[in-house]
Image (cartoon, rainbow, N blue to C red; front, side, top):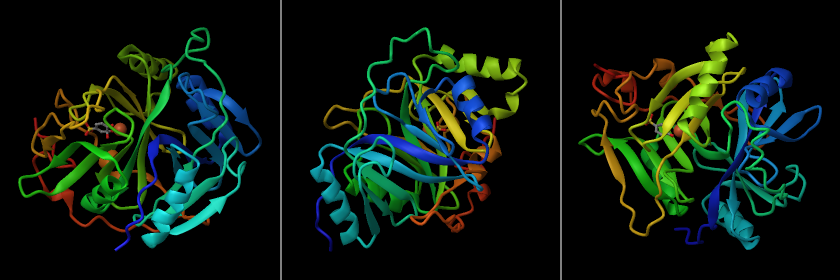
Length: 336
Ligand code: XXG
Ligand code: FE2
């Protein structure tokens, strides 16, 4: 059994989405949502929120097929990169190392393909951009502040939970049933509800990226603006209050169908001994605290992911048919 210790992960830090039309994507992410452009070229746009003092939390790269090519964790020290490489090699994962600059404005990286099919990038150094949080003159849309979390679709929620807790993540909340089946989990390294979450489904897929904004009225402003501009087709679910996490939320689909959640005001999980909050899959408030129904496509659709060579990963079908569960159930069992 492999005994190498995990790297010290600070937080989820960025992700790269493949988009088919950079102009349309910039309109959505920058004009409507309020991201800041750090840099751009013919192939990619590097975005950040107002409270991100480093170069980017989102890379939009032009490509033929919409997908997520990777997501990244920041590690505490340069030595943690070696730890990340050894940890994954010891556990049978393919590992590749890249020099500084392979990812723009980022130092050396370690890229791995995890057992679930996700490409994860580890890095320590990233270009410091500077304080930007008080540029109220530039804030608009949802006044995006930071990447909050990354939600993955997996056909084995328990195995993914065990993998991430072994990597040192805390478990903040779950959705489960009386038999101990896990339907979804929320796990953290930074001191909030999550950096990584999982949703049950055909995998590997990216369910959504979530970015935090200061207050719920910023979320309402995006919904109002999309309505006023006749761009309401981007709105998928919400606005609402989550049961899990207690955050105020809105899910949108970008021009390529990538799902983004605008998320605000969850709670602190940093006390030692913080206890997991376990929701019954039959509790109608778990996904929306006001028990508003979840649209089926929120459960059914997600972004494909690429492998280390940039190929679209095949899908493994989900193991259990959640649609047969009629009450609650992650999926679709909203009864009112
Ligand atoms: O961030 C989240 C979510 O994973 O997107 C979903 C917090 C809560 C929920 S849920 O729909 O379960 O309330
Ligand atoms: Fe989320």
